[in-house]
Image 1 (cartoon, rainbow, N blue to C red):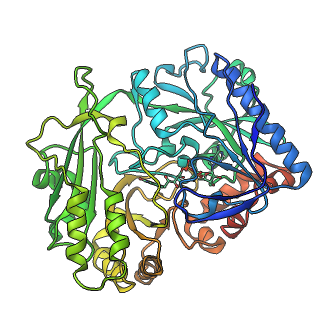
Image 2: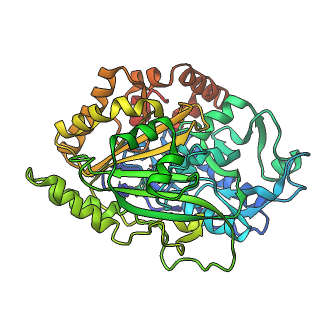
Image 3: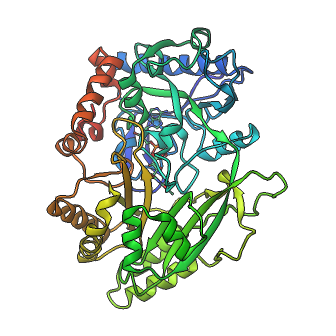
Length: 502
Ligand SMILES: Cc1cc2nc3c(=O)[nH]c(=O)nc-3n(C[C@H](O)[C@H](O)[C@H](O)COP(=O)(O)OP(=O)(O)OC[C@H]3O[C@@H](n4cnc5c(N)ncnc54)[C@H](O)[C@@H]3O)c2cc1C
């Protein structure tokens, strides 16, 4: 296996062009070509272990890097080593000899940390499986997406990290196989993968959404569902206040009957024009589960197109305008959903993997979101929109819905959650608007959390406040994972110190 490729000192900028760092080294991990997953895991983990030990001895900070999609500075390590994982991207089947007795291997996949969501979707389909949920786009790595609690709007699911059943995690002191107390893999598998077993419910829960503060994840075992398809309704529609009430109440069936199909939706997302939410069209996306039908060909393009790119570009153009913003945005929203798929379009059926979209980098985007109990949506709705506009607004406001997600630091920590995204051009206006939203929620006494990967204005005191006892459990689990403070220090960065995570 070739040694990791070292690019040397350089200035690195993240995907959205929002953060950059002067690195002492950009290290690109190379992959093993070993046929067996256990061998591949062992070889890659040994490379990572050697890097971490070298860094520790030299007093260098190391930051694992996924796709670098997070607009927040969580991937930044000034003067340190950024270690790219994108080439460690293989997925493997598991069989009954690999798993503990009573575990069904047929729904499990062994995934290397740098596999993108798109690559995982493809491999899952080849194995007759589907992910249960995921974000809107598919270029994040699975480890990076889990590290921030990436989510979509599947009504019955949590975040992408909810798929994870076990992780291979490397620290300067060793290669660990982290599982909950209930065993998943056999001791033989774990040893062959070069790892030492660490069974601890809280360490496992801390590793699920770790923001890169629990060690270097090299692989995961994930649980999927038998392959399924979804029917896609994607349309413009006029919302009423009653619709907002239905969403806050979780009355998705009635919402769907009025605006989509008369059945329970699997996924429901609403994109609003904040300048005039009830007198301008909203963009709806409703997905309904369908049995897998191999006779249905993959669509020529993914059945997505939330039109974020178009909306964001228009947002940039709008940034200097004060007049007609509701109308300009409405035009952009129409362009974003140029192809409508309404209730009379039965063709729009695809596998789950074909509903997420690839993405091209757009420099200088602003993304910020808040997650709160879904029941608070009704009383928060008007004040939030008003606060957002008081700062000048951005582009659209998106509502997504999900269950409580796994992980001590999962932002979706309420039984039923609404996530409200505030997107826009990267400007003072967007940021000011987001700050106004956060301040208004505090003034209303509504509990909420923020996305680790997006602009969030968090600091250590606020993180401790938002996550309460789970924050302290996270820090205790971190000490069990890395009892030697010198190991934890290797993963240090200004950002993680600021967040109180290291
Ligand atoms: C176009 C676009 C669309 C998006 N859509 C959504 C969405 O629909 N829903 C949503 O919730 N979010 C969304 N996001 C946010 C995005 O999902 C998160 O920022 C995600 O964490 C990015 O994954 P990544 O692989 O790029 O991770 P990175 O940004 O590279 O890393 C994120 C964190 O994970 C750590 N990390 C990465 N790999 C490892 C590893 N192997 N071991 C340990 N730590 C690691 C990093 O150090 C860092 O702290 C979107 C972002 C973009 C740019």
